[in-house]
Length: 232
Image 1 (spheres, rainbow, N blue to C red):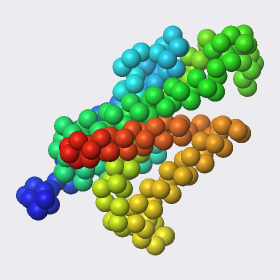
Image 2 (spheres, rainbow, N blue to C red; image 1 turned 120 degrees about the vertical axis):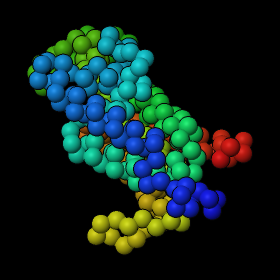
Image 3 (cartoon, helix red, strand yellow; image 1 turned 90 degrees about the vertical axis):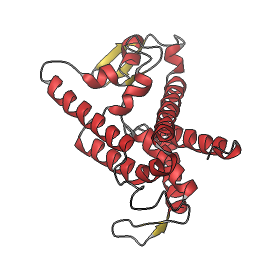
């Protein structure tokens, strides 16, 4: 353990974190550039509902490289680095990358399940269309409009893993007293759960809160499996 935290062995920008940051930045810049020639990269790479015509299997991973605006990518990448570089230094690049992809898939699955239960009446043909702000659109068109993007599922998985490994480490938040990681993680997850319930019973805020929880749950399950099999 001492070698992992030595100046020679511990890196503040290990390779997987660095490459994830670079890939996300390149995809974001490309999405802005291609938008001017009528190509919506976020629609191509973003996660569509599994029954939609624009759904493709690669989207279950590529959606996590897409972001809607600068704030979206900045805070996701900052959080990924802030909590991820320590995990990568301890686990190694391959294990950390596997963890990130597992969290991304967990978030994607949670979002697909959420969409199904939100629109199961449409899927089952109870209605022929759905009312939107611009009128009524066919069910197939509406379902194809459902797209999720962002690395937040990975971020929540990494955050939970960090909290499980370093529960008593202090996090220093702006304008607040230092808080132990375990309380920060628990509080954040509870907030996301509350936001998920609020979005389900009232107007959605456009944020995939269930995907966040899915990424966190996938992270918890993987950590527990690693502990049980002594691969932690």
